[in-house]
Image (cartoon, rainbow, N blue to C red; front, side, top):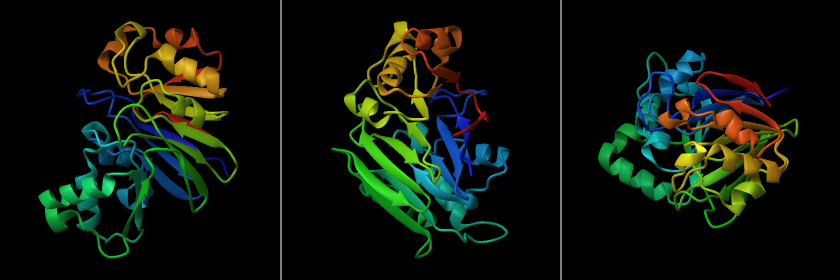
Length: 256
């Protein structure tokens, strides 16, 4: 059975009526995988007829608020639902340091975000080198990338052997090229136009260079700051990448 991806957010921390902060949903093997949990994500899920109670795995790329800012509300909503209680356990997957981060979050919210026994599992992945885990019908490989100390890119291989790679936020780095090797689909940040490069982020041409070097079959650019709206992002990417380029927008769907 094919895996399906829905872009829940293609934007950034900058408020926008068109673009939610960067996030996407992957439906694969009968399970729902959520990547990042920034502001507005629960509403976006409802727009595609998915409840927070349907999420099996939450993968976090790093701890900036536009990628993790709704986590406390997400957990709070799982614990105090109406009309029914949480039935499916949630697994949070993140880089080393998340457990410490979560303890500090609980020091603010206390038991409001502590789920019942057996309903939450946390998996911390290595932030110094590649790491690999198997979860149900998928295999996940992570790789540290150049943004924050806890930042990870993810490589998901589904039951059909198809490969999805998510860059998270990242600057140019060897790890991102390595984890993207031969990917069927890469969802890659492209925060600013080529002439407005910012440390810790990619531009369209740089994302294209990485995808070209990695022989990525299809490249989806996302995480657009407002400056991207006035630039020819697609052609900037095509200057370095000769594969299929897609510009993400909120609620678009893709098949892996």
